Structures are given as C-alpha cells and as structure tokens.
Length: 171
Image 1 (cartoon, rainbow, N blue to C red):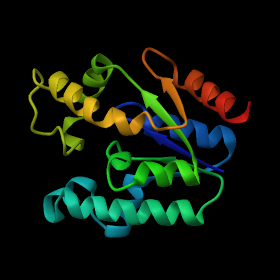
Image 2 (cartoon, one colour):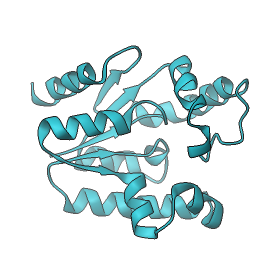
Image 3 (cartoon, helix red, strand yellow):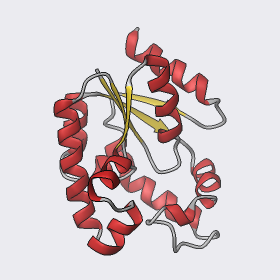
C-alpha cells in the first residue's frame, strides 16, 4: 500500500507522514526531498534556476516512478503536486490519498514562520499572507477534495491525526 498525503503547504504533511510511517513501519518518501536529491538542488534553487514549469515536470516524473515502483510507503506530496497534469487521478489510482485540511488562520500562522523556505510565499508580506493563502487554497481545493479521505488538522495533536488516518484506511 502507498498512502499519499495531500494538502496545502503548512497543513502538516511532512510531520504527519513521519509519524504515520513510523507507526505503520512503512518507508517515508517526501516528494520534494526526492526531487532535490535527484537534481542535487534545493526546491527554491530549482524554482530559481529552472522555473516552476521545469519543477512541475521533475515532480511529475518522480511521482510516477514512486507510485509505479514502491510498496508500503507513506508519500508526502508538495502542496501543488495534485494541481498539475492529471496528478490527482494518478495519485488516487495508485495509492490511498488523504487530504490534510487546515484553516486559513492555521496555515497563515504556520507559514509566517517558514516563509524563507517556501518559494511561493517568500516575497509575500505578513499582512497579505492570509489573503494569498485564501485565494490559492480556493484554486487548489478542487484538486485536494478529490482525495479519498479528508481530515481536519486544526488544533489537533499529530498523534490523533495519525490514529484517524489509520482508522480510515483499515476499517
């Protein structure tokens, strides 16, 4: 089984995937880290040197390969991964997909502390961040909502979220 975690940046995909993979004794693959490893560049460097379109092509290639060749994996996807090409259909066809939902307020609070690591929001002011997230989330929710399961992460302990994911997958 492959479990794919989708959701907006800051929704908790990386943190939850780490706990979930340990609990299930599954391999953890963070798609962005895999892309960085393959290209010997950080994600911000890929965006800066090659542009977003090239990044999305690299992302698609890595996604397809992982879904076709791996087993017993928790796959943490980038926030934009489900939005491009027909990635969400491929994700749903080859894995169990979980949408980690978080409110705009929660996302704004989390992301304001991580802006320098996030190319898409690095140049957005604190005051404009909630509006940017709201607009972006509105555009992406159409894709995220295609996930097979949806879990709210607001004001919840990561361990409780992991328990709910396991219950949804195995009951």
